[in-house]
Image (cartoon, rainbow, N blue to C red):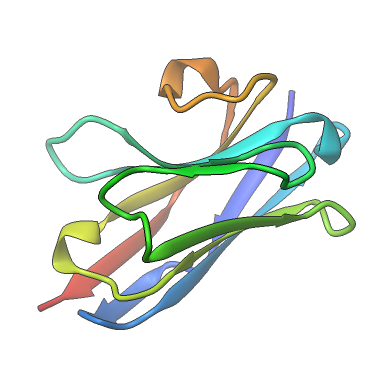
Length: 122
């Protein structure tokens, strides 16, 4: 089992930026694929971004492509989500997750953090 802890959420105005961090422990960090998901009240958890074990490949949801950037630092066992040009519709709880395969489906990810709230005001 892997332990994941998100941080960096908060309140930001539309057009602003935030950087989320996810610190991992419990297993070799470089052995897992990492992803970010988000869930707004009353909605299903949705895919945001994912990254391969060594950061060679990334994939984004259409809704965030061009605005968000996922990255990882395996020396620090940390994955990041840089969020720029934030919109009110980005408001959600953001979750960090890990998996043993490259995927965008929440069910494939086996370890999850508790989430961090991101609120974007109009």
